[in-house]
Image (cartoon, rainbow, N blue to C red):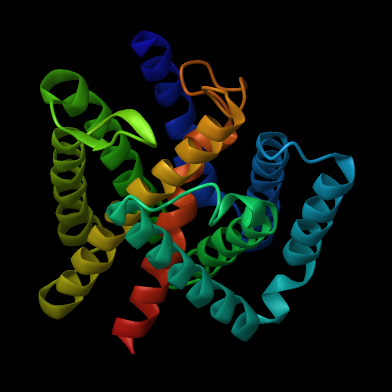
Length: 266
């Protein structure tokens, strides 16, 4: 299992980095839209939704890909709203009150909104000066947080982080993931992005929040899978499961980072 996970990551990560750095904005948006359409299909399956619901999700994403760039203010409001939703979800997770009765009946519509907000956040980030490199840096932070949490949890994990949602996740794993993410943040910020002083501080704060919220995204998807009675959202990626299993943290991290970045950089 670990060997499959590592092999898949080693194959996918360089491709994802290369495409993010080299694709023009429009085609990057198209590629991202295709990935999120696959995620929408898996989300529909988790909610036992049919082809009609998936068609609605797909149509919304297609419209967003083709016309979203012309409505940047609308995208910005969507990102801000999504960041607030993830803040609410994170609080409910910490309180141990994230339950089927309160959230899951609305999760299909919520899923479309959160996927669209993730697309919007990445597109706005990718379109900034040095945007492709910023996007790669943020993705590396999320990947590092996830990978280090997994490895540290396996090696040192004792205290359960959210036993009712995901029994395998531990406090020690989360601490390891956050420390790994912090190192990647500082390395990218100082050397690759040439940030100094206040700018480096803003980057570190926003990236740190993104890493923390990536855990909330992971746990929320874990709850969806637990209620659906499945281990993975799909079987497309050996060792990782489905598309949602691979991008669940990024879906939460992207809007939170972009909202914080635009707010603090003003």
